[in-house]
Image (cartoon, rainbow, N blue to C red; front, top):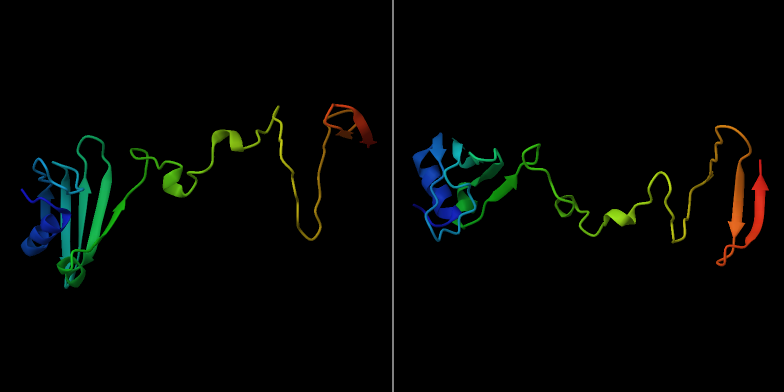
Length: 148
């Protein structure tokens, strides 16, 4: 078996368009799904390889052209879906924790809230009764109230 992604992709390219099975020997640095089935397509100097993990249905797409592959480079994209859901860091939210979001009910925001736009509004809608906006100090002393 081939030991690296570049070796595998060059061998697939040399064979032309075909179906293939991922062969990854022990010690290989290749990122393909071992024993995964796939499709290799070649059109002129461009090519792509689809590699599907047989046990999880995860899918990787490898793509490039001859010049890049000859220089040892190619692109790879792992597809996300029901079998492979992205993590928060995969979508650029790695620094967001679950407690960083104020919940819709029964939560306390401990930082400042700034609304900056041309005509900002705050809406308080009571299902019944009076709506009140209350102001408190740090020791929970009420400092003011606006009733509507």
